[in-house]
Amino acid sequence: MKKRVIKIILLLIMIISLINIFIWFYENNKTKEITTKAKKYINIDNNIISPKIKNINEDIIGWLIVDNTNINYPVVQGKNNEFYLNHDLDKKYNSAGWIFMDSNNNLDDQNIIIYGHHRRDGSMFGSIDNLLNKNKGGKINLIIKNKKNIYNIFSIYKTEKNYNYREKNYSNLYKKTAEFKKRSIINYNVDITSKNQIITLSTCDNDNKNRIVIHGIKIE
Image 1 (tube, helix red, strand yellow):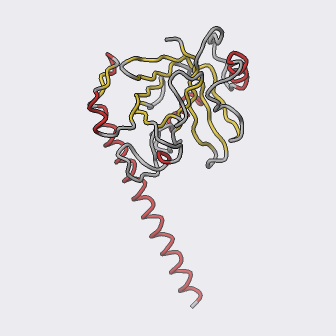
Image 2: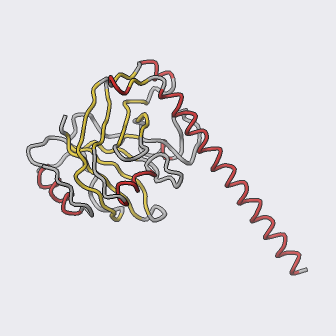
Image 3: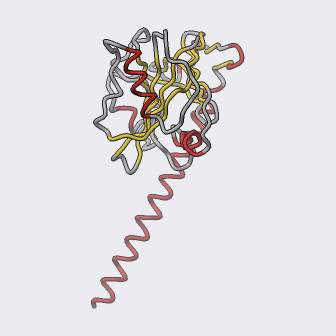
């Protein structure tokens, strides 16, 4: 009897695991499908995003591209910071979520904050590991209203969730950027003086116990 119960439990575990694997592959394929569809509405060379992209999702506010990563996605901004944690660009449930700007951000804020999941398949912000492992810097490109805003990466680090890196505006931006640069695990040769805006990319780490954070400083 005991052996039979154990066999049933093991069978249930196997079935649940197979279901989870199927869901994982389905969601990843859905993410690729939606991204491919969205790319038809952007001309990256000319920084032009067709207004028709709003037919996919009215929350789309721009496009994000990060050097030396696979990050090349439309960016949304929802009414809160929870919805796109588990909904895709079609607003359907998907544990991969989507790349989204902080719901409280305005484009003229000192700190533009963008979130994305740290997916194991490298989608969303999963390929941020490239910057950690290969010590590569580069640029963060945010195309909004047919204008490319370019930011030089100047800091990357892992931190606890309660570290204050997500303020929209600071009383002394230079002092804060200097603090971010000091925390960086890589010493980027990037000037952080006389600038008026930074961008922050935030993703989960260590089973959501910590965060990986990247900061870039605006040059154009």
